[in-house]
Image 1: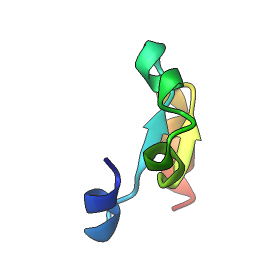
Image 2: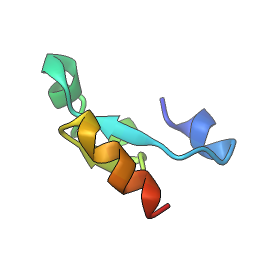
Image 3: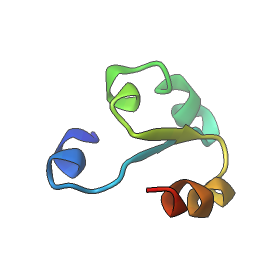
Length: 50
């Protein structure tokens, strides 16, 4: 999932939202994301430090 985005130099976030977000949170793809968060409201703070 995140591999093409990371390869292109984009920031990646795994948003644990809804059942699929939590089911995939332990996956290899989710671990490859730069950040993981439970809320979209955390994105400005995460990206501000990028």
